[in-house]
Length: 262
Ligand code: BV8
Image (cartoon, rainbow, N blue to C red; front, side, top):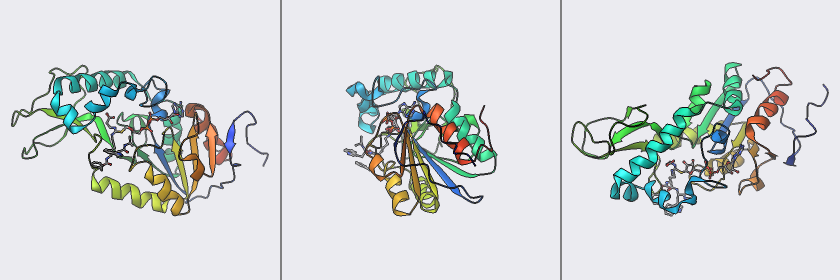
């Protein structure tokens, strides 16, 4: 078969040497960069959300509870932005691989649900989602619930059951991730043959740690980013470029052109 490598694709390292088998287990670890081409701002890098230090505080339990009005304004604005966003070709390519029958799971750090909107059905959300809300009172019997009001009707949102302030059902900094979510992601990573790290700065743990777990478990690791990251040294390949272009091209090559992408 002629080499499907497209010359113009800038490969920082590694030559495409992974061969796909029918039972190959593919896992994608995605970060904010996979949603950048959908118009969802990233956290770090040019125009990153965390450029404004005071916003990082709102993504901590103490910061949010110290000023729930400002906290909810911050999250309401992000919900409004996310509500305008559509999955991009990177999200769609991953979903297309699942629909084509490949064993594909997504472990995402993102809270925008764009993977699910693209059609991915096996998504592990490490940091929760902005489209769910929960009560902050640990003694309250209410459960997290979906809420897609854009904009939010009340700020701050208050629990109808106990009157406490509500919060987005996301994992703040300094909060433990859900232990079941962690073990599901860990188990999948350890079974993975091809681990694709897309659009993450590889700074936030424990999420970034799954790439190390994949390495130790013998997976072939491909990184897709617009710049090298602290994970680059442990990846077998790094492909530089906007993942909305590089990821569909990567899957086309991987499947020998078997599946085209819209
Ligand atoms: C925990 C949800 C135990 C909320 C997020 C000191 C004190 C306290 C904690 C810590 C500490 N030091 C370390 C920690 C642990 C901390 C951590 O890792 N901090 C980092 C900053 C050092 N982690 C935690 O706190 C975690 N919990 O450890 O619990 C504990 C308990 C008590 C005390 C201590 C520890 C919880 C982490 C989850 C936090 N929640 N978000 C919200 O969104 O508001 S984190 C936030 O960063 C996002 O969720 C995001 O997922 C995550 C990682 O960011 P990325 O996704 O990588 O995005 P980023 O913008 O950074 O990078 C984008 C990348 O895309 C770039 O590389 C860019 O080049 C690339 N890109 C851009 N465009 C494209 C592209 N690539 C391809 N194509 C493109 N077009």
